[in-house]
Image 1: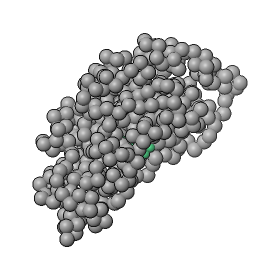
Image 2: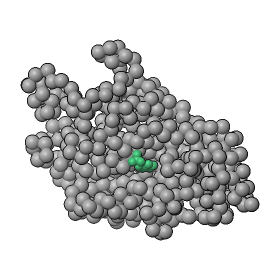
Image 3: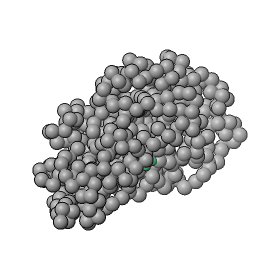
Image 4: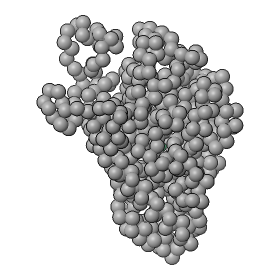
Length: 428
Ligand SMILES: *Cc1c(COP(=O)(O)O)cnc(C)c1O
């Protein structure tokens, strides 16, 4: 499928063709672990990456491969790798770049689980992370040192829905010669295409909008194929002979596909964070309607955010689509089709009111997920951002006085009526 086609065509056709064996029009679920080799020589060529083919489903599987190719097309990347969750995608994205004693610089405005992964868990690998406010470009550049190997942010950030100035951040990354990794989960490639703004790698929690209905846990990394892994000597796993793959020089041998092949041949092979074919199938089904869903998510988010913003019981609404948002001027430039559908609402009644609203909502579900057809609500400070210090919570936009809303695809009027009755119950 040519990438000349429009987004709506690519989201249905990219990466797939009628099944060569049966003519099946929909992508079959290849529920198999292994693939019969034609002969010993064929097997050897596959293991040497001299011929691309299927060996074992921890590495590649035709259903999972179809999803990877579709996301690469939608993100405008050279290649993509699927993995078992969004968090797996983050570790897999960093894995070829990092080593003991090395660090990354990440935004303070991130999903709470990512802040915990980066501030605590990666230390076990000898990696570390410095967090800075990415609206302060001088601070971002100053945080980079000789041991920094990547810059990490979210395009639209969880939970506040703030928008990162990707071209400005990418310019800093380019200046210091480091790859920019953008978590595009909240935007999806329909609202934002980070590679067009200078991102090197795009990571996703496919659990969210890509699948779109709360059925799958999955992750993806799309690679722009544009970063020169050999220029600085800082990325030996990609530029030098890789001892974990019989001395193959991935960048020299595979050019723009170096990162993708390394992630499969070494990352998935040895870390085993593999997506299963059934999960890939559900995500492929979800992506077929991505543009239609995202447009409606944004339309409903606008209706709900505007209503809340005008309500006297509400202190503030963080949705970047509102003209008063400090990130409003970035919407047209970075997310031209809309500011997404995840934001926080601060209640004048503070923590107590937040708890009562959550308990009284009927259409909204109280869950730790987002990007579902259903509207969802959570009190971030006591859940998704619970492991954070009060300072980290405030910097991430997840203070105790805010609720996070993920606006679904129901009738906007029903969502507003539900919020209205819950706010009334909370103030009674
Ligand atoms: C949910 C989420 C993740 C983690 O993804 P999982 O699939 O839950 O592992 C990472 N980043 C963002 C922005 C998320 O919303």
